[in-house]
Length: 112
Image (cartoon, rainbow, N blue to C red; front, side):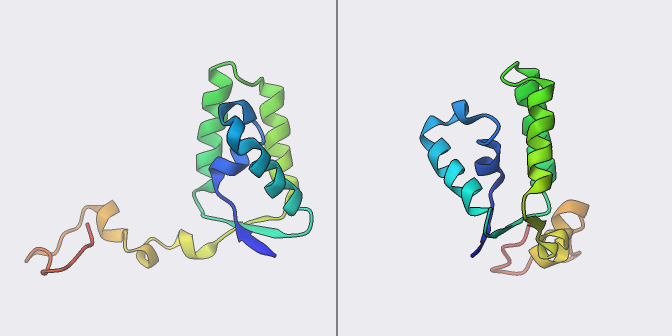
């Protein structure tokens, strides 16, 4: 069974004390990865690195804990979804670049 892994779930493997109610679910997801593959959005690495740095900075984990967590992620069957790497596929190119059509958005246009 393949599934999408959210960074918030994976991060509970490092800091389960931040969400005790979600820790059991996170553990079950980790167990599922023994026989499954997880897909993550392309931002997964940035999201996890940001939180790892923050929890380490707050003293919730040590540098050694962070290194073990990062090593664990590298050993698991986790793949980045290439579809999320293409901003145009998400309709975000215009938002990120700040480009706007000269005439403005058309009625019903929900893009930026």
